[in-house]
Amino acid sequence: MIEYLDCAATTPLEPRVLEEVVRYLGVDFGNAGSRSHEYGLNARRVVEQARDHVASVGACSRGEVIFTSGATESNNLTILGLAQHGLATRKTHLISTQIEHHAVLEPLHSLTKRGFKLTLLPTNAGGFVEPQSLSEALRDDTLLVSIMHVNNETGVVQPLSELSEVLDRHQAFFHVDGAQGFGKDIPALQNPRIDLISISGHKIYAPKGIGALIMRRRAGQLPPLTPLMFGGGQERGLRPGTLPVPMIAGLGKAAEIALREAEPRTNRCQKFRRQLLGALAPLQPVFNGDQNRTLPSIVNMSFPGLDAESILEAWADLVAISTGSACTSQSQTCSHVLSAMKIPGAQIEGAVRLSWSHMTEMPDTAQMARAVQLLLC
Picture 1 (cartoon, rainbow, N blue to C red):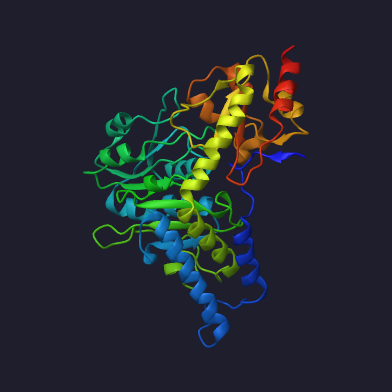
Picture 2: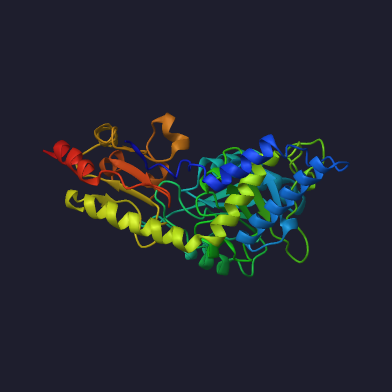
């Protein structure tokens, strides 16, 4: 049986989440905007309950959470939604990093065509941004700092606490793409200095097509976002359209479980990591990213002398893995993340990403090791 080790791309549905989704697809199927009957009122109740669960993970209030289609939309709503405020206040400088997901980099680059200036911070060899580089890049006209929580290719966790301290006396809005870390590395995203957090349901065992944006109040005011779409007025007017109640219910259930079961899930992923890497250790893999700073469920590695496609082919009947970010895999271009880390080209060409969850079964690691050993002979 082929074991699924590509959870950084998407996760399987948690059974309790699936049960919740099915209920609001087939039984309690009302429109949350209908207030005149029980079907609509039940739908509204589960939406607000889900909002509470997401808020609990983020240590914020219900009124600071809006639902979107996923982290990509939340990233765009944040970055593009702040543009009008930036132009009005003459704060047109943006800061991000060289290792961001394209869902952050592309909207940022689009603003440079409207007169905004963009600074992309470098990363060190370990795959994380040094707080000092942020301090040096800040300007009086800096509008937004957007730095991811967990890198989707390497699993390296960015130093959000230290970065928040750098921003403590600056008025710039701090946005974090939390797609990979929300519900997994929970305390980091609860830092009150983080103004906006993008969330993706299908990274925490909820359905694809649902996500959220946390917008923390500052001095009682929500971040001054301008909507990208219009019509209907839902989600504080920032995200119009009929709410996808089954998907929202699923995200809420996933967030509730993630908060309640965080410790045993982490322990399970750490145990899986030790066993998997222990079995592959004789092959002397080279790890891409500081292994003391990675999420316990993601590893990016290279086997000297082998290219990634050969490894994928050798493991095709054993595990489902990725050569890097699933969102850019069709481009067949060199990883911008590993390039930014100044990893040698041959090592980048051999890089594979393995990612798992608390539900993942251990693959036949002995057979995996033998398959790579045959390639090395």
